[in-house]
Image (tube, rainbow, N blue to C red):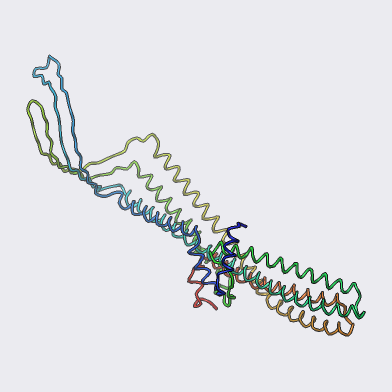
Length: 428
């Protein structure tokens, strides 16, 4: 991990107050901290500017044209009235041009820019949802690592008490040296596991800082989870709202509009044109003139070296690519939501079993402690029971945090993960 990150984390440990951060605050921090999200905002602004360009592309143009020229005239001798000499010309014109017919190019261009803008907006929403999900993942990961440290500390505390009692019993000959060695080995293993858990928390905290810009000194537990549909059929229908799928659909629409626009490249355009100017010619006879022109001009492209044909081919391939992308995104979303929902159902079904297993393991451990005093159980039985309880408690911690992640992951897959979804009015 980058040494600078650890230095920043160390600084937070020293100067940060013991303030409990909740999930809402972590999400808001990550949304303002995520650089990719800022880039997507700029992309949306670029699309807005491109739409404005499309609206202004066919409009009134006013130009002021100045002219200065020099001309030398020579005529053959056989001409009956030869004119020879030089001419200096000066002129200025005010030109007005306004398209009155564009073969639909103006509207199609605007439609293409609008579709591209909506596609960029959905790209932004998709990045925003992924940022929220990533924040939930690192948030729950920190909570999980903190809970595991707490469990390991409790177990180590119990093991050290067992070691103390085992030393006393060994001195009076109640247990063997092998029994004492088992306890000492278990204590050493407990220290190693606690050290590893603290190291894992440090790495996870660094990831949290990279996502949110905040060090997770203290996090609040997640008390509620957002509602999600209880049917895979409903979920599969809702993935149509996903921003990535909507983005692909509007990109296809933009490609289709560009294809229509390309097909219009060789279509005629009609402009209303007007000229207002003054011209001065200096010859052997000076002359000045004012001119005014109003008319209609039609432009019909006839030949472009095959450029239009190449543009049409490119546009057709763009549309084909967009079709394939829509199909691929739809399929991947369906598979992901099916997998996540199946895992969530399995976790929910496991919760009651884990609660029962913890209760049973706790009762068994208490009875083994009593029987150990009477000599009917061995130190190995006690250590085994404590390890079994720790294993089940660890599974429960992981199970609970996985339920949170999968719930938010499903919300992201059905296009409903936004900052409003985190508010308590939508929670159960």
